[in-house]
Amino acid sequence: MNYQQQKILGTIGLYALVAVIALFCLFPFYFAIVTSLKSGTELFSTTLWPASPSIKNYIAMFTVSEHPFGRHILNSVAVSTLVVIASLFLGVTASYALGRIQFRGRGLLLLTVLAVSMFPQVAVLSGMFELMQYIGFYNHWWGLTLPYMVFTLPFTVWVLTTFVRDLPKELEEAAIMDGCTPWGIITKVFLPVMWPALVTTGLLAFIAAWNEFMFALTFVLNNADRTVPVSISLISGADKYEIPWGKIMAASVLVTLPLIALVLMFQRKIVGGLTAGAVKG
Image (cartoon, rainbow, N blue to C red; front, side):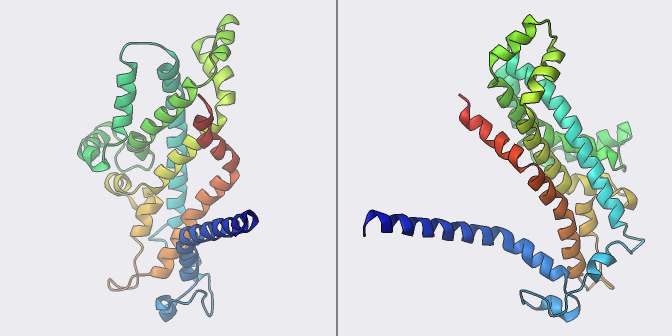
């Protein structure tokens, strides 16, 4: 076998491997879409496309007054957006302090931030429950912003600190020579070059807040204030023995679409943010 044949076989093998990985990743979502278009006994068939596709499962998600799924989606969008804004604001300011200002214990503080991100949610559940009740955040969708930041803020600070530490010192020194304050350096010098890192960490924080279940189930009991993960878990059938797979799959598809749209919208920034650390010394 000559070099040209080896090159062709290698290319075929590479594309075959990519096809297998893509099929493995995308098939569950495709099957969820197919199941959401089925109804009746067809839900239990394994066909790859329904004989008579229907969108009545999607319509049913927005027509049940006892289960305001549209309101739950808006709650998730609002609380996830608040979490991203708060995490990025605190993350950017903290990353400037940890990445640029020399002070004793900086490394230990950064390791502590990283350690906090490894805590299991159940470890802080009881303490957070008492805090939420004490400050009046309990049983409100906007109150979920505080517990969600327990797991979004640490990795936001860690990622942004790594990015800020690798920025050229000449940028900061030139700004200081021009009379910039630390806040001016952050907003006028660093932020314009931090967009890839901000988009990447912001999107990861949004996905984490969007998918969170345990805190949302524990801290919100009011039906109108629930978020979509809890809302999907509470979808019920006509009786207690029926599991409405069609509605559950329809709801799962609906809550996945915003995340796909965000990734497609910011894909170039995400790739830039993820690879920034790999090309900086």
